[in-house]
Image (tube, helix red, strand yellow):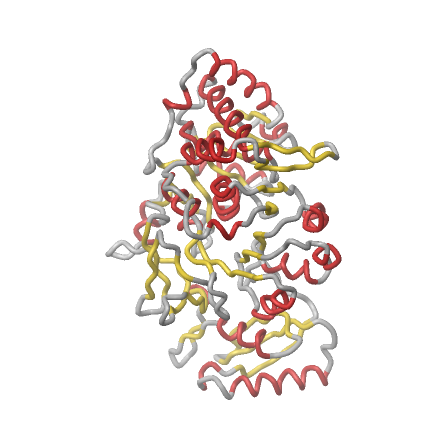
Length: 478
């Protein structure tokens, strides 16, 4: 892959290289609509030109909607030098939307037709369907000699995107990303793993989907099916011919169980890129028996967002860091990152930015991990989740949870907590949770305890038939 420093360069490259190959497919009024790479460029150039004529240059532009070509088109037009793009999750409640708009200085929004009517009384809004007329206007302006696209072409270091993250304290922070932050990933050694055909089911407002899928597929010339809802996803898996999927562990599990008939029809599927939450080894093994690789990835919004990917398929690993960054483990076990993908700062939050970096300029992830002799990264927990016992020992609950899930048959998930200065574990199992099942679980934990230092031993065990509460990406709510 040639070195491309900006999204504008990427769109031009894709149009020239892949031309009339299909780039996106989506269902519109019951029919499948295909968009070529050449059309993507023409639409993006025209929309950027028309919005510039409308006075949007330099503004912070929100993009809100479900996964669709309308979303992709709006996102790319804003990202090509017109202004600063701010992806807004489609499920953002009204009060959250007001806070996000205020925090990120959003003054205009491009939104799909489902959301635009409720947004227009609050802020200047253009719906995706209204973009059609703007695109026609932009094409006429370009034909008449309008050079907006060249004049607004961004540089690699230009601040171009704000993506919101909860941070390590729960406070919402706006991560400022440059063109190069995103493009170093979109043109990296990982891009061949995207495959020839894939399905976009993770929200496009998420940092991972908007960079590692939307931009990467422009790099590779792959075809991306745009899936706006979970209801449409299983049939699309069966009929699209996708050879790769980007999904969270909960959805990967659902494909093996509830949606298994659809998975069995996915004859071309070779690889799942899976992240956002811990990936149980049992899940990896189950797909391996089907001839499908599950590659675990690790990243954060502040790292644009990909740090590592387990391309070597090492057990329990989160992978080799990308060539665009370096990873080190601090004395306290924290994973720290430095490289082209790392943000420069949080938007208008100097205190949080200072706290996020070490004195010598490494980004503090807030995650705990280790590196093996090959430089492969392993995640062991979160600093904020550490359990500090009365004897001063620090325990990572995630480490013990992973051991329990991987070593005890029938355990789907686990949750370790502190009870009276000792460690307790709840095991989520499907099926019997009666006395005999509990006795067997206690015996299994007793065997596990023999392999652990005294302070890490699990002293209390309970079973539950109900899954633990999780957030939108599948992380357990503790």
